[in-house]
Amino acid sequence: MGRISKKLQENELVIPEFKKSNFQVMSDIANGKNSELTGDRENKILMLIDGFGFNLLRELQSRSMKAKGILANASLDMITTVFPSVTLCVMSSLFSGMLPSEHGVIGDIQPVGRFGLMNIMNFSELFGDKKVTGVDYDMIYPTNYNLHKIQAAKGIGIFPQSIQQFPIGKRIMSDLHGVEYSTIKDLHNVMDGIIREGDHGNILVYYGDLDHTEHMHGYMSEESISVAAEVMELLGNLYASARNNGYNIVVTADHGHVIVKDSEFKEFGSSDKLAMLLKRPPWGNARTMFFESKEGEEEKVEEVFNEEFGDYGTIFKSEEMLAEGIFGRANPQKEKRENFGTHIVISKGNYSINYAEGGQYEPWFDRLKGQVGTHGGMSADEMQIPLIIF
Image (cartoon, rainbow, N blue to C red; front, side, top):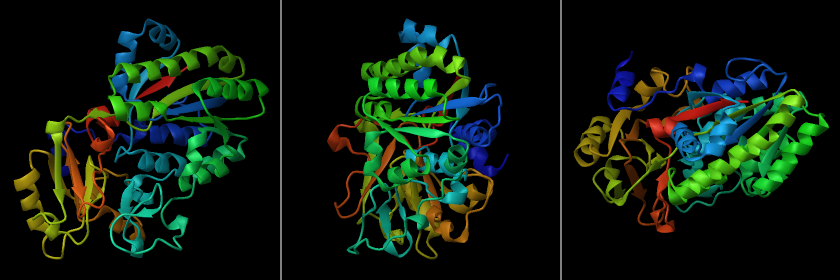
């Protein structure tokens, strides 16, 4: 075990286990492989439930006898997601078949060449006065190789209507000839129709309402348990039809959640001592933050961070984390290397660290909108996700 991996474990952080991860699940399905991660039937319905952590599965089993009865028809296991545990990073990995070290999409906020730091979900620039024009989407988001494989084998995607408000969503819908749904009742009808038609191979389903509920109420809230129970009921209603038509239903997630209290929330801004040592504002998110130190200030950055934020997070050299394969086995392509900066900060416990550039972009973790749940870090709650196979 390397030095970084040992330190991560000492901090009770979870290292991705790529051979037993959602990345491997998707790879097996895209390549038409039956495995212990995908089941034994010819075709698969892969349902990706945004925000469905393994801890929530256990809580659901303890609170809902109906969900427990439905899950009795399935095999249950715990796997990991890739890191960072943010939706854009994970979905980029699953859909492209490339690990984070290869595609470099490691957070909603990241550097994009000469355009500075951008929120790449929405293509808006965060810092500076440049106008975002002429950005080639291919310089940011990888090719969806796995989706192309699924589509070529007569597969189809089922996505919420809201996905098309994002550039990435439009591309995903196009690559997988996606079908839209509105409510969970509508999702049931769409899935049931496609299953019974028998005209498609693998079916990829994305469900995002649980993640939104967890952000607003927390992952152990009555509201979140209720949404999770509705999804289990949906799967229970489709179970017999899926089996009769030659499908395994494979359920997993992109990440889990943590709850951040006011006392676990720390902020710093562009005028603070730490920021003055950086070439540019940090990026990533409030649970995993990336720094680019000024030349010759690498050690000083670590020193100041540990003095001011050591109780809230642990700082690592990016080069060491990459070398130990925390982001995947491959070294980043040259044009992606800058995405990882010189240092990476991973929050401890349930802490979140927020950054504001002159008050222009505050906060990263949006407590002003009442959010209590977040993700992106390396805790067990965020990294450990269920694998359910019907």
